[in-house]
Image (tube, rainbow, N blue to C red):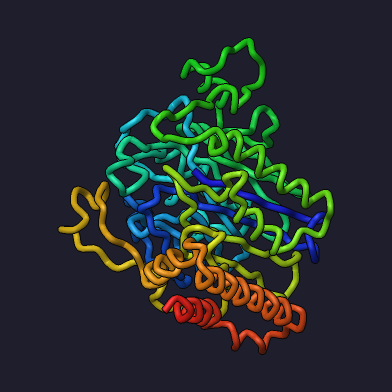
Length: 423
């Protein structure tokens, strides 16, 4: 269950496209941030997703991913083609508690889209074709306390020109194109009849499944397939419908002023009143904000990740695609042996905390204490982040190709600086 946002010209600063997401997951889940280089693959080669093995694409793009340590797939990320993608859990009328038949899960679709797509529309086409062919579902988390938590997914894809919102129920889907202003999604179906594309035979399939009457006209997707999952203890403010409403209000208020900026998205993802930044049965375990430059610009896109929970107590750190980026190992979860993993590598409580997570956990206790030392540490983290934002802005303003020599270890350097302050 997550919240996703996109903002496009003319309401954004510098005519850029902004993509943002908070990943709201079981509190025990650790998000790692990893880089995978581009690769060419032999004919007949396979790729092992979280559960299913698929035919590999001839070429996969370089990707930066924020993902659960236990899963092959990713909660969110970007590729070197200027495409961003993220998913959120949705409970639909076609979901069944404890349905653990292993198929593709939401994170698998996100990673497959980023590895294979050169545009937001290609990402949409990649996911929908895989969805129709393979279906979706299976164990959707590692923590056995959430053993009945299986769900369907909604997605948001963005590139330098447009965005696509995709909502699904089983193998059925609808998609909406966004070309200007702002849009947001949460863990509830929200596309009614205002979709631009849909799965083949949607109306017939909806009628066959008993969720739409033939004489009711065009299928209202949200009305037909929305359902409620009672397996989580959520307050009124934490409910998906409220987070969707509040998220859109926060976004539209900034759009009304125009010139939406990076700091606006940091603020939205850190907002606790709306529960966009959630804590409880679900926790915001990782966050991403991506800034995509105008079409045909030679200036690089910048992708900001926390790699830690509690965005209000975390630092957003920048990543820029280049020839040979070096992320280091501080945001990569330790490898867990099969003996530790247990049954089929899932539904266990393996310790997947990476170095940054452990050090942030230590620092977070101090920051949450309300002590002078805690306030000083939080202020230091904010100063570190603001200085980095200023440095990146200066880098982009004066950009020329030779400056790319400065960015391979950009993310790694900021992670190491953050860790030093926690010691």
